[in-house]
Each structure stands twice: as structure tokens, then as C-alpha cells.
Length: 480
Image (cartoon, rainbow, N blue to C red; front, side, top):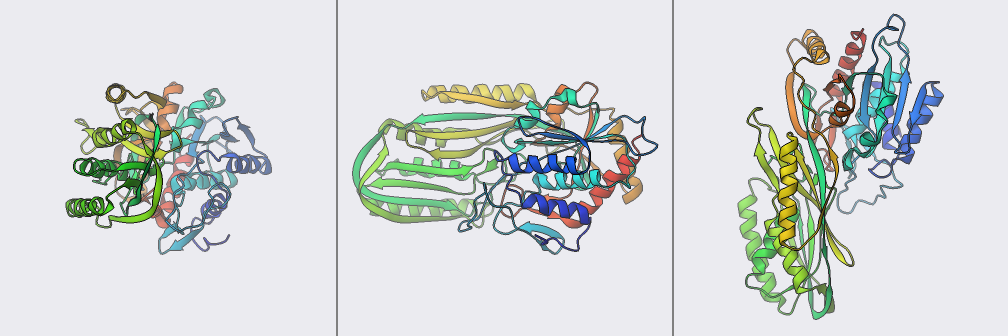
């Protein structure tokens, strides 16, 4: 602890460091949820904690604000856990190690979890500070946001009296987000009948790709390692005999995979390796302007009896990976530069009896999302494969007459001297879940600059954290 010293706002980074020390990857919410509950108890606040580990902490209004309408502050407790090759960490047991590098906080060899730990830290610092002027505060800490906003969708919204909400899960300090995409998760299992073959096992490792957030960076020309693996396999299968023992890439549905490992079995490995190296060079030259750090390694890992996919499973795998749509499907005609509809093959995992695919779908239009689900269902049905759609969440639609947005813009302009940008984003925010459940809902999403979230290069800007925190305090003071 005490790695984040002498940076402002002091209490925000104090609480951020506390959160970093608690394992809190998606699916591992118990510890961080208890931390928030214990915070409420220690500060004598009323609170609510549900079976999904969501926590609401209620702070009464400060003097003079007793008749003001409540305001909801909201962020999520879970983080995406990624690590660099060779980093020893058990995300179920170990915390994150943050450190200061100039005007940034980073993590050593892992994702930082500033998405969305910095929001949690801001909320705790606000709740703690008795000197602030504010209306009644309902601080909502949700769980499992990164895996389909599960916590928000399970939250009992009747526990909230507020109709205006400040979500702190945006990632650009000079932007006010006013709309976001809805989404769903789509899974397919390719049954793996296996056969025994004699041969030499060759491992092909694709790595060094940028990866990133499948909503925010989906239009950034970042190559999906799983899709690239399918392209390479499809090309090699034209003139080379081989079998597939395993293929694995990515472990988060909403992160663009930056690496993939394929184990093949072949009789004539010299010809296979030669063909693979030749095609990899072609790919490298093609994508060097997008992915300058891309690497591919071929390694002979053993000889003898190999357990490999049956011909049917091999064919389904290669056809699926070569043909399944991925990336941007449509751009918005109404909002310049906004991706309207996209999808991302985030997980490809070989298990004993099946190959699992997990695809994340997003759209700022509900009907377009449904159409994309139908498209995928039809494609996989053509391969005699069953699919499953789950974890749907609605988009957050633009509100033309937002009083909360107008107030924040005025405060920002008077403080900074210029107006903030107004943006709709393609990434999903929990604002859509709240908007669908709360009548008369008014919301903005703000936050400090975060870079390369969901990757091990993730970092949060310290000075922007201070700026956004002060903006939130001024907004609370003006919410009467």
C-alpha cells in the first residue's frame, strides 16, 4: 500500500488504492462489495446490499438542501482482469499493484481497473466528506458490469428515489456523454468429437496485437486475434494437410483479443511450417500500419499420438472463424463518427468436448441489435450449430431537454472557460438499464481520461481525475 502518495485529490486516490488491493474482477465481487458495506456501517450511513452484491449507500442532504430532490451517483465495482505474459498473479486472490508515472496512475503488468474503480473511489470520497454541500445522495455501486451489466439489471430500482443520475463511467474529461449503445452476449458451442492421430504437434502463437475495449476501440482498425487465426487456418487448409488439437484466444467477451494460440498436428510439418511462415509474412505486411507490434511464432512441441478435432468439427471451426462477421457493421447517419452497430468475437476456448465462442453485440438502435442477433443465429444454423443470446441491456437514448446536462455544461463553461463536448458512445453504459426502469430519468456520464482500458497499458490521468472530481462537487452544490 501507499504506492499512490502525494497526488490529488488525496482521498480519491486513497480509496482507489484500497480498491486495488481487493481482488475485484468480474465474478469475484464478494470482497469489494463487503468493503463498501463496511464503509457504510463505519460512517453510520443507511445502506442496501442485495444478493447480486450491489450496494446502495444513502447520505442525507447537507444543511440547506433537505428539500432538494435526491441525486444518484453511480459506478461499477468490477474490473476486466488481463495480464502480460509471464506475470504471476491470481486475480481471485491477489490485488492490483498501482504506481505513479508522471501524470498517470498505471499498474504493473496487469489492467489497472480504473474502469471503474476511479468512480468508486470518487463516490466514497464524496460520501466521507462532511464539508460538502449537496442534496440527498444515493451512491449506487453495481456489480458484473463488464460481463453484461448483470448487477444493474438485477438491482431493485424501487430502492432509489432519485430521478437524476451522474454516472462516472465515461473516459474523457472534456466530454459529457449523453447516450450509449445497448447490447447482448451471443454464445456458440461447436461439439468436439475427437480422434487419435499420429503426427507432430505444432503450436502457432499470434501475439502483440493491440486488443482493447470492444466498444470504444472497435473502429480503431485493431485486428481481432481470433478472427486472424481463422483467416490463417482457412488459407493453410487449401493446400496443407493438418488437424486441430486446440485453439484459444481471448478471455473477455467485451475485449478485442490480442493473442491466440493454435495447436496443430501434421505428418509433414516442414511443408506446413513453410506455408504458415510465408502467409504470416503476407499478413504482417498487410497490417503493419495498424498493428506494428504483431508477432507470430511457430514451435514444434512434440511427436506421437495427438487428440484432434474430427473432420466435421475441424470444418465447422475453420468455416465459422473465416466467415463469422466481426467489427463495425454500421456507422450512425445521425451522429458523425459514431459506430452504430458492431460485434466482437471475444472468447475462443477449447474444452474437452466443445469449442466455445463468445461474441459481444452492440448497437445504439434496439432494432438493429435484434437484426444482428438474427443474422448470427441464421449463420450458425447453416453450420448446424445452436446458439444462445443472453445478457441483453437496452440503449440509453438521447434526452433533448436534459436539465442535468445543461447545468453541468454551464458549470464546466464557467470553470474551464469553454464548453465540454457532447457525445454519444458505442460502448454500453449502465445508464440504459436505469433509464429503462426509472420514469422521468435524467442522466449524464462523465469521468477522467482513461487510456487503453481492458489492456495492460490501462492508465488514468491524475490531473483530469482532480478536475472531474471538482466538477462533480460543484454540480452537487448547485443541485437544489
